[in-house]
Image 1 (cartoon, rainbow, N blue to C red):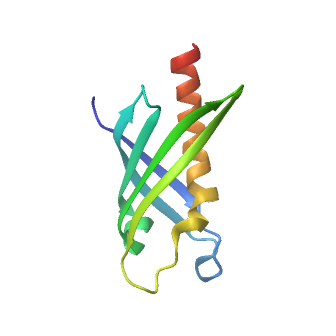
Image 2: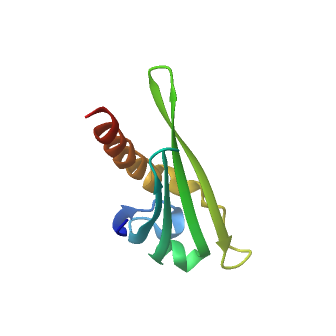
Amino acid sequence: MASTMFIYKFLFLAQKIEGQEKVVKVVVEAIDEEKRLVTFKAFEGHLIEQYKAFKATVHIENEGENNLGLWNIEYEKQNDDVSEPFSYLELVYLPVLRAVLKSYMRNFYG
């Protein structure tokens, strides 16, 4: 499988840096179509300034007629002053999840 790289631009709305554009570059490390897993790893940008390592895996599950996206996030903070990365879920991961689900639906349902 060839590597795929995504570049995400988003506005982080925390008070300290309100209105500043932030960029995150991630690479798709693994795609397992059978298990419906995609693993992303951040390698440059705002996340790497705060976290030594940042990896996310999305797993698509079917529950009846619904498709659910489940996230597993692995990270290591640069220092103890760095907060947990939960604020990124809405700003970064929802667009990623939508793209993964759209691709999944196209690949598996035509």
